[in-house]
Length: 372
Image (cartoon, rainbow, N blue to C red; front, side, top):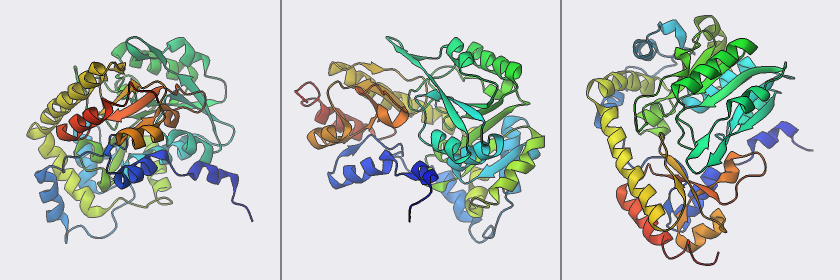
């Protein structure tokens, strides 16, 4: 007997594989994007208070307290919010709900690895628009984006700030994307899990320009340094949210209730006490340590404007040989491209301690410019 072809979408990702090898080789893991910092104490305390009080199923749309906290932040009503088991489930629920067999989903390339499997599982075709890479880094060609749209296109999936490139889209770019969606009557899925990790002025949200068709995805795990909590959300047009909540009943049904309650309290504390500002400053220092360290080794490294990832070139190397030679784990660009990836390009995660980043640079120094 053979498995159904759709199981091809469930093949193991390179991310846990690299993390497993990194642990075995005692390598510095700059591959998988989980922070070295522990969650903030106010989150741990809030979750501890929730235990014994919120221990049964939450509604599929989410615990009311969390929906209310998010509604306050986004300036909407709680009915505009659906809570999910992490942003990965949010993307899955949206793609399964908004596109189907014969439809097309436009995705920017390089892309986060769950996007294409979700399109495949929905029976839809992913049409890719590759970002251009020049001296100043990655940029979106709006003409290429419009050229990818056909009569079968139903939705456009955008990641902003963008993993793996660190790109932050400008207001005029987001406004142009919103106008394009209106002209072609497209849904917009805006994956904004790194919304609090940016290094310039606060970028606008895509939903500001097309709230009637935009679904914003967020993540408590990225904001609060707790990626294992698996609490995410969707903020979108009210009329569609019951459908998304209904789809949730056939996935995880609901995110863990005590974690939802703890996150609801912690989101308010984080904003009130300046947690995000301190987090950004911490990541700015670590970004600069890694960025300038790589450049001092003679490598071309592209400065990210957001997220906790940067892309750099290591010509002649592949990720597994580099892991063995330098004991530093990275993710190759091939994980983010469907075909013809730039094989010299790698993603570095700087959500690690300064000590880990310095050790990674120390280990890379004698290796990267030697024959591969």
